[in-house]
Amino acid sequence: MSADPDEVEGPLSGYHHETYVFRLPAEAGVTGGGRWKCREPRASLLWFDRRCFDSEERLLTELQGRIDNIPDLIEVEGTVLQRFIEGDTLGALHASDTAVPEREFEQILALFRQLVAVRPGSLLVKRRCDSRDRPREGDSAGFLDRLIVFTEERVYEDNLPEYGDLFAELHLDSDSFKQLRKHVAGLRERPFCLLHADLHRENLVVDRERRLWAIDWELAVIGDPLYDLATHLHLMRYPPEQERRMTERWCALVESVRPGSARGWREDLPKLLDYKKAQSVFTDVIRTSQSLRLEPKAPRPLLRRASRAVRDVLSRGAHPLGVEEVPSVSAIESALARWFRTRGHDGNRRDRTRGYDMRLRRQGRVGS
Image 1 (cartoon, helix red, strand yellow):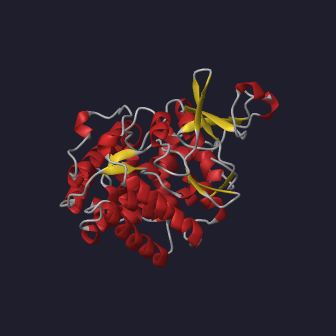
Image 2: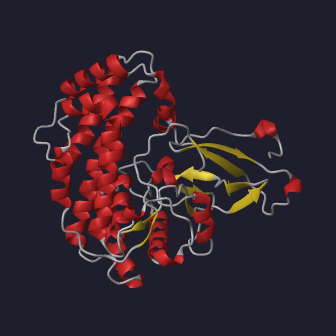
Image 3: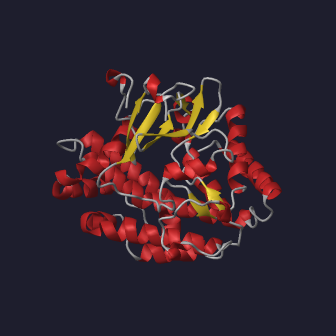
């Protein structure tokens, strides 16, 4: 499809997809020029979040005119292409734990305003999730419980054959989910809307005119709007004062668009944030372990860095998971070394880590 095969760029870094970017030839008749991207899900990929919609491209088509600054789409020779946004990710420009400039901050809020206005019944996109994963309108507690079920069954239980011993050494077991359910019980009801569910600095692209574009809608879902805020705060790692401002501004604007969307946020937002911290324990333990496989041997400095990363995420998620004593860095390092000796050379699973490792090594390069 490319106008010049020598200029095809890719595969680009990213966990969920293998992506290539190229220009279309003039005879394709596409107005506006620019480059386009073709994506395909990575083979044998571990999914750590439940997916709701059958097709990201079909969802984006439905959202044209309702959500500003999302990629255009075209269909060429039976393949749906997304326009490639030329720019830098917000993370490349402003790293985690640093403040987001006011102009971009306001554009994030504008995106949330548009998301909360998209009601469940207004989307005609085919959904892939089972009916049991679609709680009744406003059932925020049911929505969160289905997310916990996914984490328990698909992330924890499905990976026990490979990671069970490692989980046990980190004091993680089936009781962790019982503790988590007790910890987050009692959410208030809020009217459901469309959630991006993955709004972090690498999924926000700033173009040359400082317009902010939201990309990677693969994990979009219908559900509790406060969950979208919790996910955003958890992933963005704003400085404390900016996190407070984002929370207050978000609550005011969603209430103005759809009353009840921020109901009970003072009690419920900490619970949803604690769920995200607990979820991250399991996903980051698996991803960090997988990244070790990319080395023929696991050298001591790499193991030590991985151990510190695991301890950090486990420390944050310990309370909601009921972990009374977080293992030391040395104990985690020993556990990872044992896991690597017995599991680390499983070549059949190496491809699962490829996108994640590319993201870890990424140096803030352009684009989406």
